Amino acid sequence: MNKSSYSFICIAFMLSACSNISTPVVPAVTKTNLQGSWLVEFIEQRPVIDRSPASITFTEDGRLSGNSSCNRLMSSYQLTKATDGSNSKLHFSQAAGTMMMCAETLMNQEQRFLTALTKVTQVTIEHGLLMLTDDNHQVIFKASKK
Image 1 (cartoon, rainbow, N blue to C red):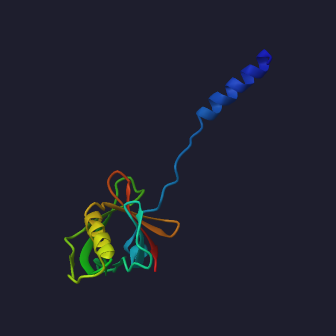
Image 2: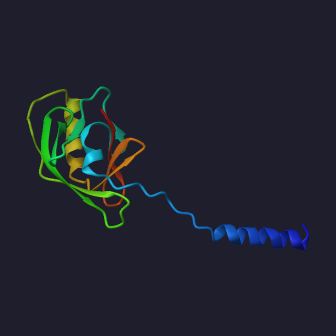
Image 3: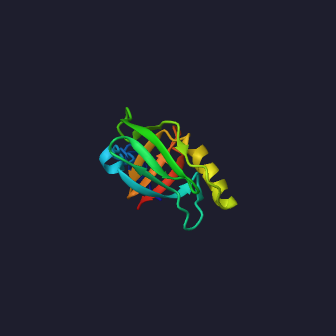
């Protein structure tokens, strides 16, 4: 390799290192695009049981309802914009629910669902999927629109 080729490669490398590579900003979630029913597909990186009724419904007036896998779920939520504008903060009040018995596998999943719900602090909607995450951006729930 001659000296001019080496210099050219070094300059190209330095210029590419200086380029401004940024991650795309996901628009903040509003009550309007959060509203409706979402079918829960994953709870903390684990898929839900096939044909599980696990779902979450957000209403415009700040109410949350759904099915935690075995029982009905009711709560309220508060949605605020994050300071960086890339996502939205989400807070749930203490959830209440029915107390019916069902298959043990669904009851175990329900326990994971209810425990995971307390970890949620942020919400984004990416490619049509609802992503409920914690402060470390770890996905707690992934859901699709019903």
